[in-house]
Image (cartoon, rainbow, N blue to C red; front, side, top):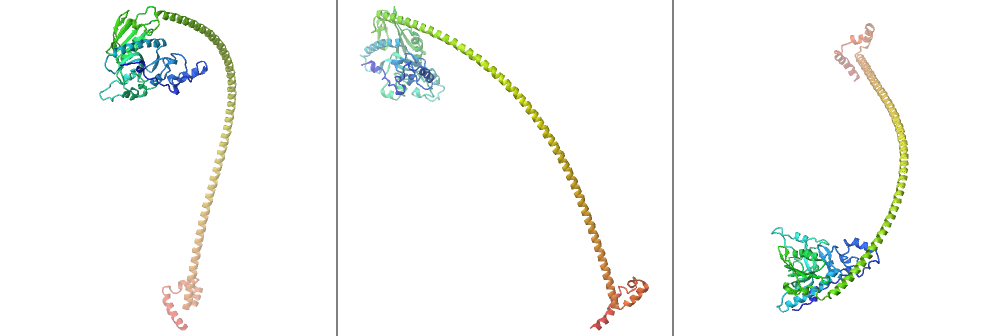
Length: 493
């Protein structure tokens, strides 16, 4: 079986044009871009687009899995993604551990070369997906009827930016089952870039080379690998730059969610069995392939001198900045005092002006109030006069109506009297007409009877009323008159 570093490493990820960092200006060319990039980083720009030009600039910045693989490691260094935050691995640690990892790969190749074909693969700088605490809590089985979770963790419900469902940790060396190209094609774009993605078989063993940052490898990474349920975790402690390097190895086996094991020191030709990697000697743990200790010591001394000079320069720069800041603060304080005095003077002027305006306003309001009262009195007097006038007119109208009523009643009474007089006059006139008609009738009857003379003589003897009373009775007259008229009628014929 043939293995190579190129075969075990995932294909390099092409950086998108939208996230390319080479197009950004260098720091110092435009100082305003620094504050702008800081303000826009959390909301708009991805983690790989931060306008910085130093290693570790993206440390503790929120990012997604895609943004992790888009970071240019030659400019910004190598990072892990833990609980949605970028964790810088450190330049010296990552560069030095590569040599140790290459040696482990060589040992694994020798151990596997005589074995039949296997799906196991050894990977340098293997990326391992580890479920986050939020993901584990949300995927705890609540009941037997709970719906099954998605095969790909990236499709779990509502992951927020900077809070992916899994962390991505780079291990110096890992051995695990190879994922076929067909199986990897079914993964999402983010998971396909990971050597050991979530929801796939975890690696059998992970090896970390520790130096100065031992806590991260012995505590933090142990917890992360335990969350992924990796059966074996090995750490090799060595620092060839130390005066007395004491290599040691820790082999932890996962039991009840924690790694149990103990650290074993390695001296000279001591050997330790690292499982699928094979047997490793103590001398192989002291940074194989690196220069000798003297070169490391000289380099360390030069580095310390440079660090001291840099520290001194930084201190002087800080003192100079502190003096400038102090002078600027004093100047600012004087300016603030002058501004405060000017503001107080302006406030006093405004207060006096306001007091004058309020006084004038009160005088004006008093005048308006008096004018309003005067106007109200005048209007009240006018209303009173109008009411009196209205009462007088009403009284006059009543008197006129009363007079008119009396006149009307008088006219009606006079009309009634006139009608009664006319009626009485008509009655008297009618009576006279009846009396005259009666007299004429009687005279006619008497004339027809030939009694006119006797009537005349008798009238002279007995008075005017005697002809009527002494004349023939009205009851007898018709018979007599008929008898007396009949001969005359005959004569007329």
